[in-house]
Picture 1 (cartoon, rainbow, N blue to C red):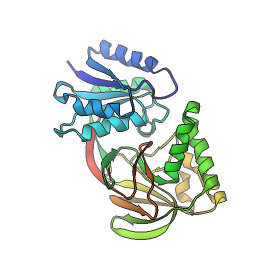
Picture 2: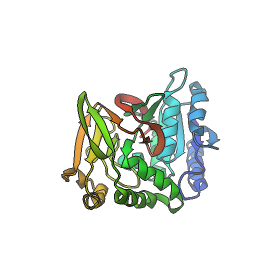
Picture 3: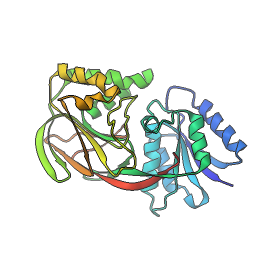
Picture 4: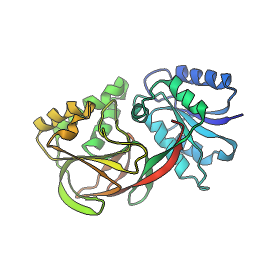
Length: 295
């Protein structure tokens, strides 16, 4: 009989989490799945739960939540003292579900069925190294406007997923200066950048198709670079983010690489999987098949 370490984030999303949780419990019980239920009580709690869990007792760690919850479960798993890993499953329940949108699995029932089928897939992970800490990412690592958008979006959390779009327009209008050195697979350049975003998934935020060519298992980072440009140009690019056609715009450079570094003149915060955490300078490397997911 399968045994699952189940984590639920009660504060993920705008809907009543209990609706999704009850659905999960019903399906688990019908399939005769044993589970240990854990409800997160503070930011970073899922990291602590997964780090301290006796994974030898479980077949997988599964979470009900969004991209932030998945980020915490991943980082808990990859920073365990014993280096033990078991597959991770996610049932979408957050306002941001970029990873699940990328694999076309936004229906909680579909996600539950994938977990019950117990056929893990090896997924690439981005390792994010700052001066004092390492983080792990399945979705995105952003600097510049990408971070500022997330900071402002958190202040608008009450309005749900559209907060990312509203925050994006606000930051485009501000359009502040960001000078940095960028090193991509050993090749260095300098410039004034609007933003730099690396993706492992096609989607970020709430439906933005930031990296239309990204694959979660190709061993590559998809890097989107937008140098400083006019507000009018940025506003013309913004609608294209939702269908992926921004990569054909002259203002946007789209690369695939295995590593990159950002060294700004003025250090700033990073956006890692939607979480504002860590500071530049930063080195990002791909870890092929870094984790197994039940997808």
